Image (cartoon, rainbow, N blue to C red; front, side, top):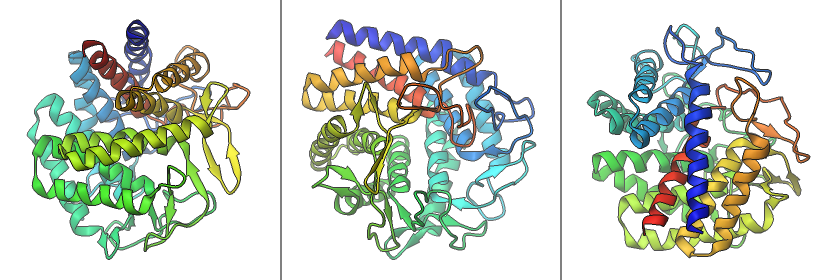
Length: 397
């Protein structure tokens, strides 16, 4: 298994350095930031609006790749993304990050979303670790303070707001015909962001809020009978709809254990290690089909398309479950998902990256963009980096 692990890590390093990052290099915009859209036919739209989540994730990807690979060119790309986020995406009038800006860097969609603020914290913390630039850390802490001041309500965190922080409809994260006031997705990515902010600051207020989010996840979001996370809620954390997101479940399984590791709290670590293994086992039994993960369950129906980020998070989640449990079946599942990704999800066309969606019959769907507000290098580059790091830990242990 050691040699199989090393082969998997080598594959991931090659995919990251020879395919994923070179694709995103070509999308660097000399006007600032990165181009906002490339469609599935690989047509670039230089004047498309630029998503702020896209740029936060690009910042995270290049910063984290630099930390692992120490290639100065990667840090230059990260700095390019950081300058754009800081200069064009931060609202100097009301605080917080816009949802999107124009191709030239002017405000476009000025909604303020807690999810978006969280991703910016995540990217900024990675850039601070990579560069040592204290202005990035200062901005991350400013966003944390803004979230804690502007978004709390009687039941936790509000999600969607107008530019001046008045409550708004949560259209950005509602789907499946539901209008959700609160979502598992935003909580998960607050956990993710606060984990990294606590890693670099050791600020007690961040630790307190991170514990609160973990408690909320365990007590209200996690369904112990189904070993799955509830997805959509009203304003008082009552579940609405009948939806289970296989990708978010397996992603959460390892992000939650990562949070506990950074907190260094044995009580949380033990509780969430058990939850992570249970979630991974459930996903393995109900979502894995013909070598890949199905997308989601909704109202009695299973969507069997293969989505790029779901498959990528699956590799990490199953490696994490293997490390926690020692069950080799989890390692084999991670290998199986990588084989699927390598065969079907990766776009082998010149100038392509990963197909966003592949049908159950393994034919690319060519509907979702190759690059855009939601299609970014975060999930697949992170899969590569996490796999490299985890296999190194396994083989050196």
